Image 1 (cartoon, rainbow, N blue to C red):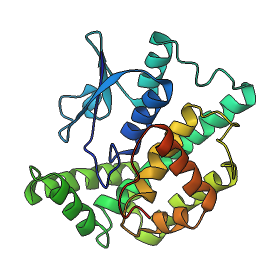
Image 2 (image 1 turned 45 degrees about the horizontal axis):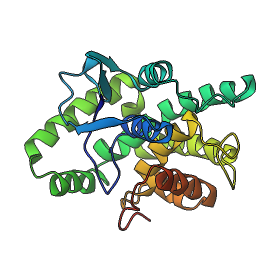
Image 3 (image 1 turned 90 degrees about the vertical axis):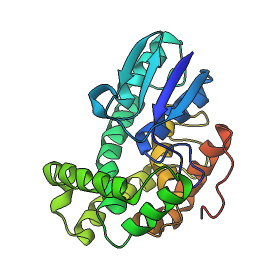
Length: 237
């Protein structure tokens, strides 16, 4: 059986990282059976990052590579109804979510206004984690942010970038159905991976304030949440 390795749950969401939750939602929507194992230490993962899967003795990292493997191996048809234009939009949305990831991560590990709430939530829900270990993870992420670029921004400028991404998403997501009609696609799984990690978190970052103020984004998030059989997290907004 395929095994998905990803970061731990938080606030009732199956993975507290957008990429792992994207893969989780895709597997659920596609009806592919899998075992889900949670890790915090990614040092043994391909490329040293989560999520990754093991399937028939092969380890595959990177969320898009994972989806491509699952699509080929398990004959997944989630995207079969998409035309050329929809596939182009899907690629652009995927790249935009890559940008949003850095702002989401910044809001948790870098912004001193919200970092203590995120740290305390992790330690409360995962008692094996320690304050010392999380401070080391915080310092590691600070290095990543600096070289990626987002770490050189002050919070208002960093959030401005993420809010621009969310505004574009709000313009694309319809009031009913999914991004490309009445059937969800892999892009809807990707959108959910990030929206759920904002909407269901009771930490009032500017990103959460924006998402919660847009009914179409909240509806899309909760619709996918229901489709994959997840319970609505308590206090999730």
